[in-house]
Length: 445
Ligand code: CTP
Image (cartoon, rainbow, N blue to C red; front, side, top):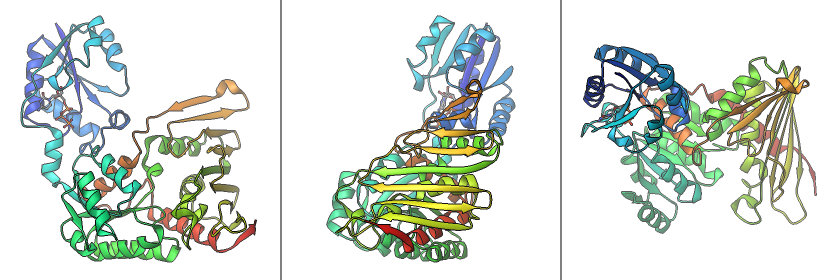
């Protein structure tokens, strides 16, 4: 009898060993499928601690597998079972009922899960749970708390808000342990903060947290000036804490893949990047004050596309902004960037609706990402000969905040001062672009 089972086998533990022993005992040949990083990402299993090679080694060293294969895509089990002439599919009882569909191909056996141990638990114990405090109590802060439940090893425990009543209400509603009246109190009992307050307050809050030795995940735009953003990175480096700008798109699997495909040469040399982000807002904070407007609110995403695809070394920037009579802020803008051999254009709008698409034009073809491109689930590489066109699909889970939080947690655990997915130089360049775009627009009304 040939048996197959699958798992991530991260930080190999007693539960894994017992599962494999019993699976092996069901027959005389055991195949173990180990998941790839990409597959774990795509099914929303973030924060796996060990690499695929290490996890394969874990299974090899157990001495229980007769053969190891890798599991890299959804639906692969049906194929594997037929290809390897499997008689029995075995899996832990946490999956009870989920694999009944495989009964069309072989027997399905659910084995009692070993109590009291899991990779999730070990990950938490080995590096400790990262205690996070939220600064701000608005809508995005609430979404963050909900998303944090999908990232293992992170626990949101406290909130600070300028208005204590709002913090208390937030803590009660989202079941957080603490509501703090002063930021200093919150900083005392957390390892990290997520800053989700109005833009103009980010710098001061981030600075206080860094000075207190607390890691900072800061909503975009981190600040509205290049100098302030650069200053925060310097302070974080001196203090030895992680500082990450919460630009979720940068950490989402689909966007990273799009950048990789566009830069791989498949569409030739990139000559232009056009990205649009608009939102229908008719009243709210973003329409008022010196930090309001469509650029400060929305330009980070399109400018992220520009720097990821063309780099940070632009030679010129020109902005046209629409500011209707009576409006405190610009509500529609086009930022044109010139690079040595390419151009980029970012359009942002509050109270204007356009297709939120991204087009990357190259000398051999182009990449098209339909709206909402910043929640990248799907893109196409297109060519003059449309038979060469290729479609790419990815998963973008929930609100996507889990991706930036998983990256942040990973950086803290591994003492990384920067993420290759979104480098400090890129974050600083975007801050500079936003500053310049807001400072010198050609204004129309
Ligand atoms: N397993 C088990 N007993 C445990 C933990 C896991 O029998 N205490 C089984 C799972 O049911 C699965 C296999 O081991 O059949 C591989 O599971 P995997 O997802 O790699 O391990 P977990 O510890 O459950 O990982 P995580 O906490 O990351 O979900």
